[in-house]
Structure formats: structure tokens, C-alpha cells
Image (cartoon, rainbow, N blue to C red; front, side):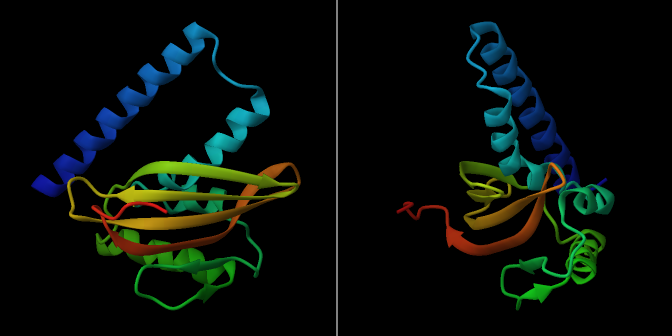
Length: 160
């Protein structure tokens, strides 16, 4: 197993432990919000939870299966249609070019049956990161992603 993969697994394990500790602290303090608030907060992490390579089936569960699905990977043109979007993720996972990302500065906005999540995604100690926008739509009681777009930024850049 390569050093990069070991580092990625170790970071994922640390993140899970940290999230478990935070969740337990909130539960003990009674500061967990209402069920719908927790569900909306979960939208921001849905994509990152679906990313460990090669978790294409998890990505399929997060994304809508309609032709209005769109995705913009950094440096690439718009991809339209659920099968093309999923194939693009499959290609990223299979190429080994999909590092484990850590999402920070997540902001969720809910407007009726549509929600969008903005966040910063960073891989380990890389000197750059991605700013991402994920758009979800509630269909048949489930939140499904209809758009993902990400672009590179320098880690030292201050958010506006």
C-alpha cells in the first residue's frame, strides 16, 4: 500500500473519530437541533461521505437519476445527464486521481424543495483547495444532488 493511500486512510479514520466525539458531545449537552436541521446539515457531508474510492454505488445513491443532473469537475467542461455524471465519477475513482477530501466552511441554504451547500474541500496538507457548490432537490421525500461544481483556490485565500 502506498504512502498516499495510507495517509488518506489515516486522515479518514481521524476525521471519523473527531466527528464521533463531536456528535457524542452534542448529544450529552442536548444541543443537537431538530431532526430536519440535522438532515439539512447532513446534505453538506453527503458528497464527502460518498467519495472514498471506488464508492460509485454510494455516489449513485446521492445523485438524482434524471437527465437534469449536471457536474463541473475542476478544469473540465459541464457534464449533463445522470449516466454521464456518474461515469465521470467512476473514471475519477478508477484513475486513482480522487484524493480523500475534507470539507470545511459548509453553509447550507434551504429554499422549499431545493437546497444548496457551499464548502471548501481540501486534500491533506496540499497548498491548494477546492471551493464547491452542491445543489440538492427533494424528490419523493429524499434529498438528491442535481448539481456539483468545484474550482481550485489557494488555501491562503480569504473567503468573501
